[in-house]
Length: 596
Image 1 (spheres, rainbow, N blue to C red):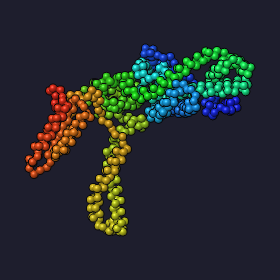
Image 2: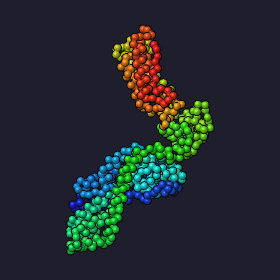
Image 3: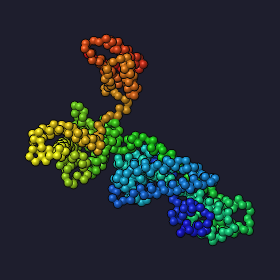
Image 4: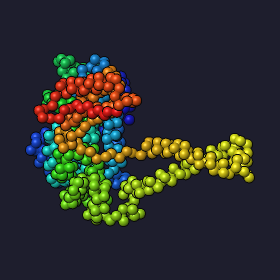
């Protein structure tokens, strides 16, 4: 209806302009922008926000922000098209519009990034806010919204760390929320960019409508202008339209009889034109900064070290990092430990921090000679798991009860039946393959096998054939079953250390390359490979060795042996001179030769 009315009032208005100004879409929402906070003020705000955030588990029917996200992307694309048309036809565009045009590929790629970073199943597990204005949305969404609003969309990891630390003094965020934060920040930034892009596009469209009206001002009645202003007010850009009309009529010169009535109407509708124009300039400057901040932050979020940010701000991470072995572990191994704590927290109805404290008490109070009990995986996935479950009030018998199977990882049950299932499947498949081969052999020979066996052969001969065929048949089925398992089962990663400062002296390693000394050219190639291994792993406490043999011969010594060995020794010595070690240190390159 609004589009039809706009077309009737301005028949020469293009379709894109009418779409942008469609009053049925409601008023353009203001940007997510509030007072800019410094470190201290941000900490105060984080603590007060944590005190007011009441949250609960999300219900299966709770709304998600994914429909709004798709709407944001559609609106951004529409605004991008309109601004692009305006720029291509020679109209001046603001710096904010230029940012949107030049960086739209970054914005457009965010939908995929967000869906991969925060799938619906993950989103459903996040606690949601109970109070307006963000009721029903994840609590971490409220945290991200506050951060974007009070930084004007600029990403600063120092401010974020301060904000999250203060927030969790009042309200603890679980680990899932912490890892959802980077993706949720992207969602809020896209929401802000949608609002900014829509505002830039609608303001531009309102000015274009003002230009169209001024071009045919003599034919427009005051009633038409009233109706047009009402339509533009539905989109919240009526004052932008009036300010542009005032500018155009001012450029036309002194008052004439043809436009005197329109000027009076304009003065009545917008008494303080100068104040409105000044406000528009201030808003445009602020929008330019907000758009550039948001686009830059979308890049910065992807480049940030979120493992470090989470380690500095998560209560659970700070607690677990007090254990020296956990601190020394590789991030992937830490993630396994943290995921195990997260699962047990859900099962025991305790907080993640409480489960982490119980785990640390067991790790510290049960020393073992080999230090194995000081490793978290010993209690989460190893022999110490029953003791950890008892400490959490979870009995081993309850793990496989009917009520617990829905929440307990089914992989634990599979581990119990894995070997019998594998052997049984191998036996059945081998017997089935043998039966099929014997039946095919009988059919191919044309016999019935009623009295003498398959294809007329004697029973003992059939048994002998089955025994002889069982070995290659079982090998074939082992290959098929192993391939199916390797393609369908997720690999289990072994725990490993991070070695962030390199290999320590107590863990020094020797990289050995088995080799055969055959001629001078191959010896040079072997030494070169040894050098490449060192260049790929420039560790202080790593040595590299050739473990060499001579080719087979009829005697212990063969002509040319001493020459080959001397050449290899010389090459190794040259490598040690090229890459020297500190005084008193073991040589970096070694030749270990075995005589015939």
